[in-house]
View 1 (cartoon, rainbow, N blue to C red):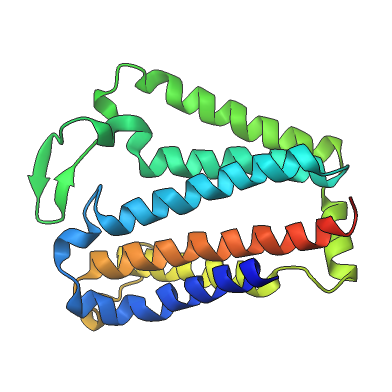
View 2: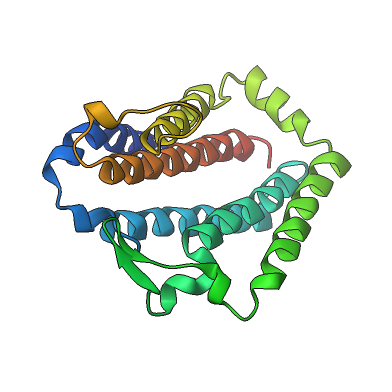
Length: 207
């Protein structure tokens, strides 16, 4: 329970600090391969490895929930790393920092099919093992991570507004918008990590 509370508190701290940090952190902290993005990558890696670890220990149907979740974490990680392009020299520098693109990768054509297969694998597990029953179990124990998932959703909406997408904009209210956007994105991943751990606590009673 302590670990779940810690994840949730760190997620909330990042969420609440994003606005203030946009005025005070140097711009480079939000660049590709900068500290905020590296923190995101670490959270995503932890989420994926935790899901695999939980899956190797759990009984049905929880085992398949974790095995279905793991590919989603790694897909998000791959996206954040531009599928490996960030390990190459940037193709240019802009006001927002170094720019990387997966278009330069020799295996770029394989990325979309691989992502599709991983998502199909997760969806197949969800249907085959009726993983919606996990939500029912969590709901009955009053441990469904509604708050964590809702906060992640709010964070995604704020990210969208910070990027001026879907006719939403926060540009007039922020310092350096990219710092806000990246920090809010970090909080979204942390909330999802907290949600995963909360479900792990429920699953622990069913193993």
